Length: 302
Image (tube, rainbow, N blue to C red; front, side, top):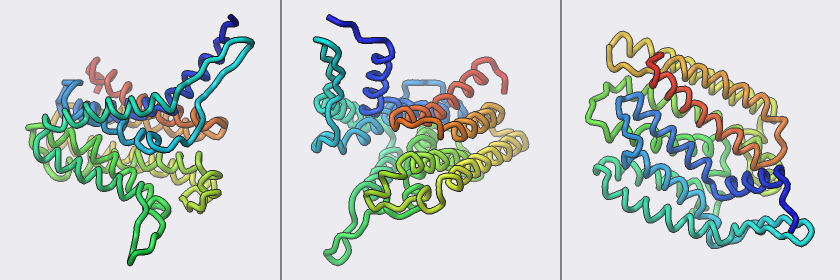
């Protein structure tokens, strides 16, 4: 039997991770934990953290469990055939993640359940087509800007608002507004980058996005501008925390470093041609932000 070359193994692993949506679920989980750390919750296995991981995994695999949209990935060399059973793996992941999601749902406070219901409605409105007077009209994700706002808002509510609701600590409205606005502006920039990734496919499907309206160059500038807003909000929030003496962990420095790193990732993203590699590249910006925050938190560098 002929061995699979190492670079082929890397391609197989990347394709598997991309198609099963595991990296994006991990990124969502880490962003949720990051919010908890900033507010003083250091329990990485809190129900409000874990439910975001399983919820994203369940939601992002759902469109593929009934309709097979792409063939199984097969690598052949000599007498060796290595098959990635995508059509069989995704339903298993969906069932497992859905089971854990509903178990964890019973461990959340009533406010958290209501918030997740709102997130579910936003997600459904984003995915499903809309009917008006019995006629099918385009879904909300086909409306430029609205698509990005809804997606960033759903992620903001799940990864920022949900962990705050679970804490006993009381936050002043301005503080909550800063936390949500920072997360929204950061995530909005990523939604624009994924529009850039899907420009050609969206155009073939008749979808109009920010990237197609503005062009790749201007859309990239829009994403970086959203990151600039994120950086300014991080600085302003740090000033408010210092003045009000709200809590210790503001993480201004790691968030600013994260903004710089993500901007560089955006600028270098045009060198990445493969969709799965592009997705992992952009998802990594959320993971890097979490790592930076944990390092500053662990070593008391804030």
